[in-house]
Length: 150
DNA sequence: TAAGGTTTTCCTGTTT
DNA sequence: GAAACAGGAAAACCTT
Image (cartoon, rainbow, N blue to C red; front, side):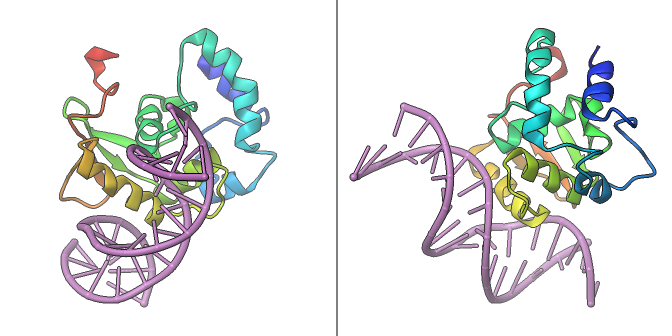
């Protein structure tokens, strides 16, 4: 169901995850990837009916979590490294920042700034530090990411 | 209006 | 040298 929603509603003229188009190109092309408010306006009624909460989370960590749980919107930006332990990797840092920027209507967002916000989550136990580049882990105070608790 | 939480922005320094 | 990491500091933004 969501497949038809994302493909026909988001990107009427192309598949959502086009390997030939970079994310930079994708996000700078309004025809290919319409502004976020437009997307949510079209999607929210459908998402509400389908029970999918993605794209609506207000916090960064929830946005990241929901992206991990939504392969249709993820497009390889984030990948699970260890699903059971909540360890994930940022594969396309620039695309992630761009997507978060669209979510917050902030076209000056960068991965450097996004990652600063992620580092603040170490203090609150939302995320735990992993000693590898671009790898993060959900902490004890993060919820909704476990497979058996969805 | 005030306060608190959550980023955002900028910065310097370090590591890979 | 570029990209990413580590945090401090302060400002912005939003909610209560």
